Length: 292
Image (tube, rainbow, N blue to C red):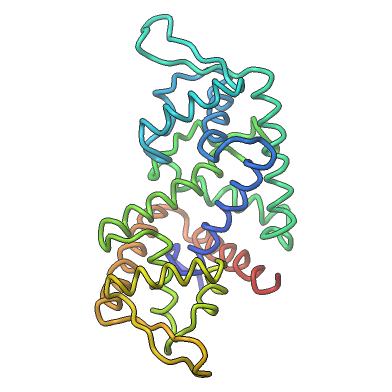
């Protein structure tokens, strides 16, 4: 049966969060720049090696001021040449240089190796091509310019793919803040409890979310102070079990519903078979975590 919507699920959220972390870790290790800075550098290449800073898909990934800070950081690091537009001195122009080009090559090759050895380990080349085709289908609605859908930086990965992973997380986070006043990771903690029939200890929540137990303990404490979760006695009585309060159940259900509608809208108009394939690929990526 073909699934006619791309579903927002806890598993999809975990996959996107993990992709963002893996990509960011590779960029930080190999290029010594931030995720946003690397996307900005990629966009210069997408625009043919020179770009007005105003043409970057800024609101999709970060605020205008944050993008300006990223551009200044790249300039200080010697990875772009920064100047003023000849026809309008108010506009900033970024130009690719040799150091920036080498950084792009090193970064994309490292990202691809990382993904190929982890969440894409059991994927065929055709599967990966499907992923590249499914993510750009939401580019325009997320505010990522279609000029970023190109293979100028890497033979497989596109700048759009990296940007859409970040933009999707940003969009989801905005929904969570708007409707619950929580961070995305706080919502994910609620979502785990929402999908389980009985209370869970922090260790189990941490395993599901792929976070450190101490991190989850801190998150749970914050949620408890907001009246969204409560502590109870665990099965073995040595550890506390966490459950949603009535307020937490309402918040989790509201936000999960909103995220489901937002995600479905992003993929509206996409061919039904591609939607079904996208859901399948997301679940296959998630399945690699249980085998890790």
